[in-house]
Length: 141
Ligand SMILES: [Zn+2]
Image (cartoon, rainbow, N blue to C red):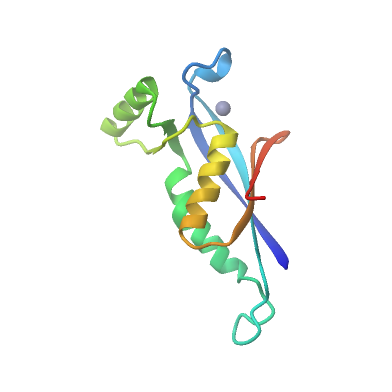
């Protein structure tokens, strides 16, 4: 079994409704995202010797994660307060993206893992750095 990974970076704004500290306020992060996939090598053809072409991995992550989340206000669809902020931003033609969970590094890592798995990527691990010194890892084992 081989594991390959690629790193990405994206910026976003969020707030944590109900947080007991400064994270309840609207603020932003530059995230580093590491997507690891696992598998055996292609044995023939253009992708021989590869688990997956890094450029194909990049294209899938770009389409399903980065294009939606980069420079967006990412919010918890179940939070009334965050949904109000998103609604105002939508009215102002500003980018938003809702997920059905609080937008902690943990929940976002799980969302990214599940989303990429659902589109057929053999994801084995997601690492998401919220700051250069803080990251969450989500794996299926
Ligand atoms: Zn934050």
